[in-house]
Length: 453
Image 1: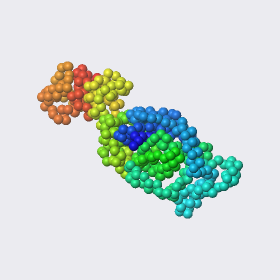
Image 2: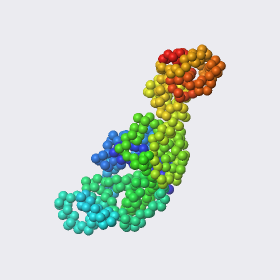
Image 3: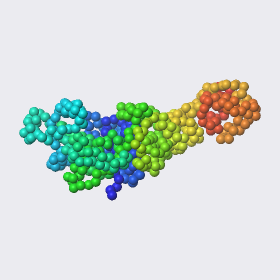
Image 4: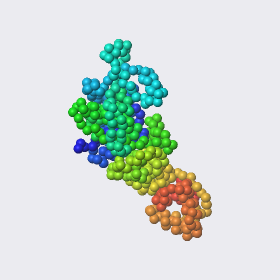
C-alpha cells in the first residue's frame, strides 16, 4: 500500500479561524499517527479573492500551531496541469461545452423547482450541433465546461460516516471550467489529489455531496492515465458556535491571529480543543503534539454537531499554563513588562493565571509600589512586630503565621485575610508562602504599616 498522504487545502481568501483550522489539525494528526506525510496546498484559483497576504497569514498561523508541512503546492503554479487534464477529458467525451448564461440557468432552476423537481442541469448542451455551437460563439458566447456524470451508483466507505451512497442520476453535471478558462475548485482539487499522490481526503461534512461528483471525476481522470486508486474519504461534522450558528472567516474574533494576539491563547489550548471536540474523548489539555497524536483516532469522531465555546479555550489555556515550565516562558516575560522575572516568580504565579500576560499583575504586586488595603491597623501592627528577619524562604510564611497567631489570638479568615489584603491588595491569589519571599521584607513591612510600597 502507498504511504498515507493527506493535504490541508485552504483557499487564501481570509485568515484561518477555529472552524477551518480544525481540518488542518485533524489531517496533521492523522498523517503523523499513520507515519505519513502532510501537504499544505493553497487552493488559490479564485483570482478575485485570493491574495498572497492571506496565504502568508495561513502559513504563519500553521507554524504558530506547530503544524509544519512535508510538502507545499499552489494551484496557481499548476494551471498547465489542469489544461492537460481537461484536454484528456474532452477527448474522451466526458467534458462538454455549455453556452447558457447565468440568467438562463437561473430560469431553468426556477422552473424545475416550481414543478417540484430537483434543480439538475438538463444536458441541453449535449443536443447542440456543430452549427449551433458555431452560431453561439459567433454571437460572442464562450462556453463553460461540464463533466458528464455516469448515471450509476457512487458508493464509498467514509472514515467517519460509514457507507455513503449516491445515485449518479440524482447529481447535476458539475461545471469544471469557467467561460474564461479558469478551472473551478472541484476540478483543480481532484487533479491535484491524483497527481500529488493524496491517499486520504479528510474534511468537513459540507463536502459530502461534492465527494460523489469528485469520485466520478477521479475515476474518469484515472481511466485516461491507466487507472489508480481513488482516495479514501472522511467527513467530520462542522463546528458551530454556542447558539448553533456556523463559523465563518468573517468572525474575526475567532481567527487564529486574534486568538493569539488579542486573547493571548497558547497553541496547545487550541490544538487540544480542536483535536478532542466532537470526539468520544474528554476535551482536556494535552502537554504536547505528540500526546495528541497518540490519542488521535478518526473512529472516535462522532456524528453530532460539536459546539464551540471560548470558555473551553480559556479553561484549557489555564490547564496548560498551570504545568508550563519556566523555560517555555522565560523569553516571553520581558516583552510583557516582567524583565528579571525568575523561575521562582513564574512557579509562584502560574497556578493563578489563565493567560501568560496576566502574570504582569502579580509582577506589579511583588515588585512595584502598591497601596495596601488596611482592614485592621492594630492587627497589622502586631503582625509587623513579629515579621521574621531576612533572608526569607518557603518556610517564612508558616513561621510568621504561627507567630501572628500567638501574638493576636486570630485564626482562620480573621488571620489570613487582613494579611493578604495588606500585602497584595486582593482577596485571592497565589499562595502567600510563595509570594511573600518575592515581595520582600522591606516592602512587606511598609505595606503592613499602611504605606504604598
